[in-house]
Image (cartoon, rainbow, N blue to C red; front, side, top):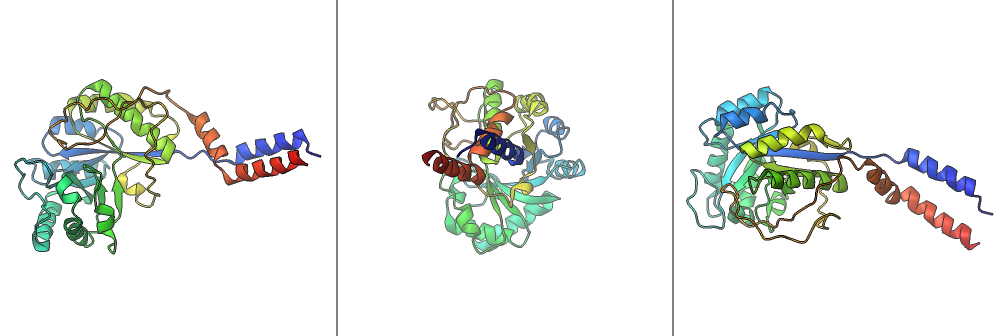
Length: 308
């Protein structure tokens, strides 16, 4: 006969034995090297905040060195050709470039951005959607032990396919913090990044050293939920890359897209999200229990018991 006390004891044991995994949130600030005033404010934030430095920026070497000295992870923010027609920056990677030219540009960028351990794309929808072009990039990166952070400026990026056969590890951006420089919008995007990390285990958010972004980060980083851990991108290289496109529970229907900022002129799907409570640790416990193999096994046993 089934005994309720046994059920209660099993539930307590299950609750105590079910780990609550902290969500891992990585924040990368792109376009370093042009705005020392704002960039120095970013470097005063927790060391887990990482920076991506434009190799041809006037303060590239200075800011990369300073970031490294203060414990921040440094990436090369390498210009790549967009689909949109616009003037290209010096040494922008294009799909039609030879392997030798791509190797030269990456070599020069590595010299201009000391202490870099990874590389991400500045713009780049035309380049990252080209499998032959990205294969040439990955073959070069393989010699530098760099990882590749895909900014995902286009949905059909070929970075993962292109890295096959190399030692290059690819991770992907989930949220852009500041497609607008409205602080309320940036807060919503920050909150969305936090909720994605809580739901999926990890998330990468990319922002820029705009005054509004700096202010929002200064305000919101100290109030991160207890179940969120700030990490460097390199700490996610061995994490499973969960691509869950299911909308978050509180997300509204898509709103009209606002004009993009000049740093990311290419189309990306954006959604609005309502503010959420500061912590949802109890929700995480509940989700961890309901999804655990032990709970599923217990439900099967209970079903057998009650059917007897």
